[in-house]
Length: 345
Image (cartoon, rainbow, N blue to C red; front, side, top):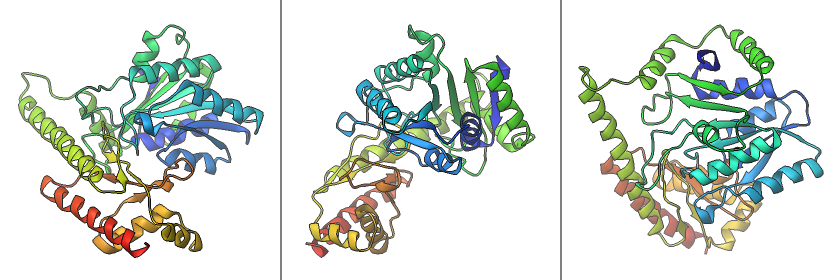
């Protein structure tokens, strides 16, 4: 039904609109994956609400478990008396780069359906899949095909600003509402209408994204060639980056199955570095990434900015550089890591 689709200024404005609609009291909460893209925690903080983090399992390539979801939901109610209204998934993952399996999605959909929780599916990297044994499966597809999820409340987000298009300055995207209560949907419509409409260039970009050239049309061959070149290049560089990071003693990194990020962890860092970070009141990975920037000029984001388990340290990086520069970056990260460990030995 076309009325279930809202054109937006990228996925970010859609997420803001939805959370603003859903949150009504200071006891309301949203379950978000940890690690997470920080827009969710930032908006919830602005709204005076709460985040309930559920941890992705790094040892199983950032998968989701039913027991983790159940534990976090139970704790949020028993310990903090929170009312969980929604749960967020980011698939493919940012910052973690994993692609959720059908089993993961079934677990999440059933969990949300069981407790009447609205599922918010952030699917802006759905075209960016690099592992040959993985595929993107939408949350809506799983919900429609899974017994017990017939009444699942779902809102899906997509964007022209990410994915293989990657036009971050062109704010275009949409959200689709599925089984959302008509009254709630009407309030979302009112809130969206207060912004009049999404920008016209963004609407054009969104139209091009969802209706690409068809076989036989004049621009089809060029479009397919450019799409394949972009995605194959990202796939090639993701493998080189992850393999290169794993060759460095003291850095471990799961495969980047999708999106455009690697999220390595730093292991066995010197205890002196840990103490200095504590003395400076910064996270250890902030100390590390600032040192990396000053020594090499390479900019990475400390993993603490996305949330992580206690005692884990790492950073997020991308593989957007041209092929010719990726080898140099990996070598520079390796050189810095050795210098950092020697400095704080």
